[in-house]
View 1 (tube, each protein chain N blue to C red):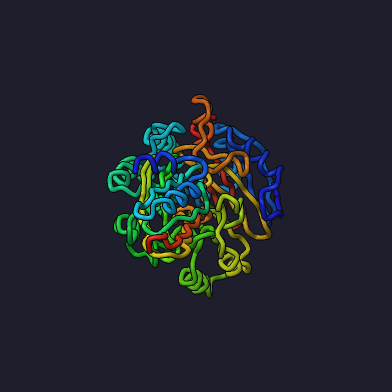
View 2: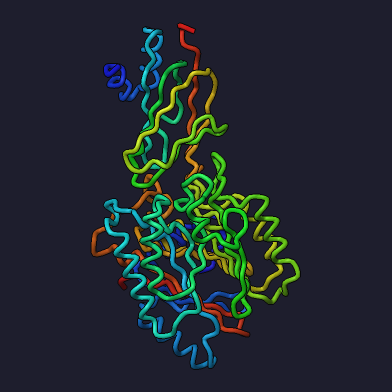
Length: 319
Length: 115
């Protein structure tokens, strides 16, 4: 589970391939991750319920949804709208209502008004507050006008912001704007300065959750799967005891723990992408129809207050 | 023109286009660049002033063609969309996909014999 290499080791890749078909429940106690093993959805809910009983409270549980790609209709999934609807239906069925949802970008495929409309229509059915950050597919129009009008109110720059919930401090970051030729994801100086400023004066015991579209660690630079100036951002978070980084973009589950920082990427609800280096490119991966829903899904994240402990459960549309 | 285009689609795109431009300086060539598997193909190409380069996206993911110095900049090109640019000034034109910036390409523009 722990992987101190910068790139994905062979072991990581293999683990991720295993994870693709089921949920993984894991927890952190005192900064050390413990995998509770592969679980299916029912067992995951059970485990959470047991935990809730033993602690007397669930603390904070929120959901992560990512890469809905409204408008995508290619062979890898001709009905991305349908699979997003399935994901939201499952979210609605969760017995304990999550506090809110985060969306880690690529809401749409081509930044069209009609695609944003479809996303809104479907996602709003979950009846949860949603905190968005854009993916590169959401800011295709000049000046990022459509995304900003819909989701950018009260945000800075291309749409970054922070907020607090149950004692946890959240930063929604944008690493898909003003990208430079030959590079990867980028936060840019202005946003980096804002991050430093935003974290100043906060207690080191405050749990920090950072969410952004492209992974903030170098998953696979050859495919651009990383953020070139993420080290500076993570430097500002070194003094915090618990930092969780949630990303999307790569349409598969990956995680890495490095010191106090846990990195995790979520499944897409639209189409799977290949594991690093296993295909000529990162393009949509066509899998047999009966496999598709095992490779799409959402994640839930739970903090138990006072326990420095968090659990991330990835739930595919079909286990 | 259509003869040139047919030839230009061949594997030796750059050379053929350059050859045509040299052989008939009055006639500008059409040069094709394919976008396939998150790469520009050919990744580097030499053309003459007056030539038009047309990029076609064959991926299931949108891409852009964006000059590093913003000399040219396509909209997001969905599958099978095309973008063309006619080069009038000699020079080296580095470009990339603004959505996937690890995708880079280079157009070298040489003065055509007629200029």
